[in-house]
Amino acid sequence: MLAALFRFASGWPLRRLHALGGALGWLTWLASPRYRRRLIDNARQAGYTFAQVRGAVAQAGRMALEAPRLWFGPPVPVEWPAHNPIDAAYAAGRGIVFLTPHLGCFEVTVQTTAERYATRYGPITILYRPARQPVLQQVLAQARQRQGQIQALAATPASVRPLLKALRAGQAVGLLPDQVPPQGQGLWAPFFGQPAYTMTLAARLAQQTGATIILAWGERLPRGAGYRLHLTDFPEPLSDDLQTATGQINRAMEGLIRECPGQYLWGYGRYKTPRAEA
Image (cartoon, rainbow, N blue to C red; front, side, top):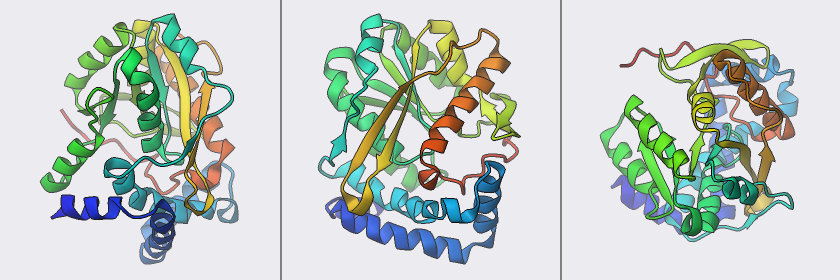
């Protein structure tokens, strides 16, 4: 039933999905005092007033409703940037670690990049957090897999080995480093000036393989016109010290978010206590 609903929505124009998603975002805002407090508090921690990030309320709803179109529908328009560091990174042969915060449309970044490069350089391997509902988990597992282009792995300790294998083969992996990892899989590091439990996986993968780090995010264009891809080299050499490197990655994510704070997922529980998990 859920899969059928997703496929039905996948045929809708992106402009309609974004319009409905914007309304959904504001309904969620009005219905949830806890969500409102967290969004405002997280934005304030970064130095923004609600007036400066109010667009993020509608953008969160658009993120939810655009997913069926991106997973099951026809391709969407995507603008590539004038500066594209991916070619040089693949040519170096050490693999690529794409880092994308919860900014704009992170689904479209991996899809667009895989469509252009996977035939020549192999699939992009990504991690996703399994849904708690079995039905939704089945849909997500199917949606994110793309034969020959995207290899989607559930985020477990066992997934580290295939990530390392992909990088050592000169392929690419994609991570959301501002996602709070389970207890024991991260370190506390500043994020907009407040300690946040931060995954160490991104730093460890780059340190162990020498892979090139590329910062990527997909800007959601107005009125459902599509997306604009942003690609940036990592701004500084990554430290060999894990704690320092984790802080460097957080600072890099902050820099991306400041490019477009109105499309960041400020309502995400970035400062929450990590859950215990084997």
